[in-house]
Length: 343
Image 1: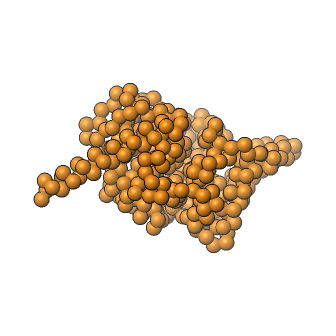
Image 2 (image 1 turned 45 degrees about the vertical axis):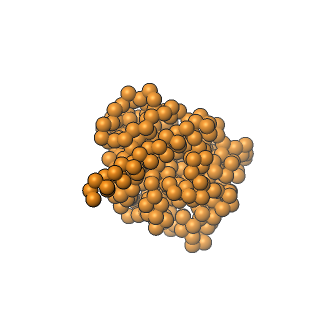
Image 3 (image 1 turned 180 degrees about the vertical axis):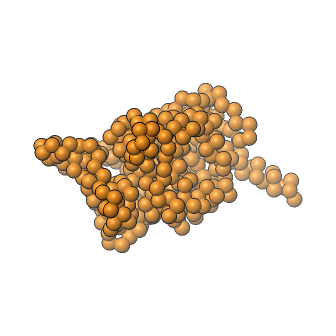
């Protein structure tokens, strides 16, 4: 049994190989929901859906977003209509009152569908409509995602980090507050970051299913430590649970070079060292790290397993997953030795 913490594309890529190393029926995946938005009335869960679509064999692996070969007729028409009357296609937040009224699952992250700043494919949209409707029928987010996982014949157990809404908000040096999707999708990660807020985290909590999954050994893939893993760590009790179980983390850096995405800029904006060493500081609960062969970082207080951590295909993912397996085994052996000495 093993549990993966997933956000962005790093951990979903690793899962391609992890299911060759571990029995998929014994694999749980806790997905970040801080990136979620309600767009035009439909709940979009990007990090959940990347795992859902990858495991279901339909993910667009060029973009690592949405469904392969999907059409975008509805999205294209939404943008045409907005442009035709001068409304534009920039993100349009609903007003403050609307953010906290009605369906709580989407509060603090509600956008108008006018102009639809995120591209949503037609089949992809069917997933969002189904998820939102299941919630409107009285299901929790966990229950709705479990239903969708069954529809995609997912082998692993996919769990949202919480049923309550948590919104990752980027505070910029220009004194703006942007939802992560506006920062990353609409603004291409260009605004200088001053701080990151996980709004709603104090009022949310890991679900019972997540707490059970965190009792198993945990692998944190090469995901962004700020906006992919950070929302989970902000939940009450989440980090404490990780401190009580074996944890191995794969660095998304090679030294101070990040593989992809905004992790370096976000870490620097928060005053953290944008490097493998900075990731280790951000994960004090991690017992071991998997680092690239070319990473010069030394972590004398952690167990380190080295391999080529570049993941371009399933064989690469299996190589990194086996390094994670070795690291977890070393942590378990050390714990056994320590227990025998204590006796």
